[in-house]
Image (cartoon, protein in one colour):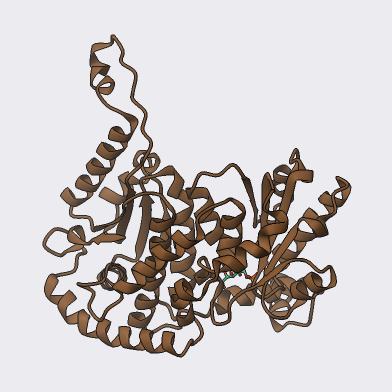
Length: 428
Ligand code: PA5
């Protein structure tokens, strides 16, 4: 992963960050890097996620998915960090296995996703670190019933990834389901490079070793200076820009296959850094589609945004057919890939010309190695940004509050949070 921050510098953008202030910030980066390295060495909660390239065992994952490796369709049931990492990987890469992700519990949508699926050739990948998340467990029970209705033994077609204990672990044990453990010390949104994200990748036949090798290569770049480390350059620059008014960070990949990666990034950034009245608001955009909507705001709206472009060299292209309409002749000389590239260059230049900060994150290809590097790099950037903000990157009390309130409202336990909701509702 390469990161180009040239268009975020104060000499070209407003808000922008000067080279001199980045040099001053680098002292804080060095101190933060020491804390990160220490956390990794001690396998401390959260920091342990940055050890996953060495800790994750692809053979263990492949052995666990063996009973369902022949699936034509893989239904992943999970939400947030228990879904988006896997979705980012499998949506980016080609596979003959159809993938369905069930995170939301909108009944019409869930039924629509399941209707018409040939369940006899399908498998269920249920993922929940806590094993208590209402959405995941409810959707799992719904999918299980759909298998039963179709006369398919779901116990033969399910793989579970969860923590050491909890209701989902109990269920897996009771039915003797193949299962994997979410590694200790790895919060959901940092778990893409563990079994949480890689079971789906394994069933889809992707190269797990290459994913981890890409991540390991990125890990090698972590150093005490933002000028030597692409991930830290990104984390430090976004932090500095936020402090100068760029409170919104729009991630805009220029590849349809990377659209889900912007969703994953939005979760990582929001849930990790949105604390103590701090944090940038992540926005999801897609090139070229959002050139025809959001770009107007990014170039001419309030100066409160950073645009993060993600580019990747495509390995497929398609020529644009020629036509006898003279005004369209220029298209006939090009390919769709060249058009995409020109659109990106034009958008990047148009923001730079208007003095709007933007950063380019470059991948050499959309493949396992580069994706592993991207996932790891953005996680490391986020951990660094969390250190600079001084927030607890690895907790998510607001998310937990709502989870408990939901369970309590449905009678799933005595929770103060549910009482608070009931009181508020009465006030209306
Ligand atoms: O990053 C996080 O901690 C969250 O987004 C969780 O992944 C999400 O709430 C799902 O939790 P669980 O894996 O416990 O079902």
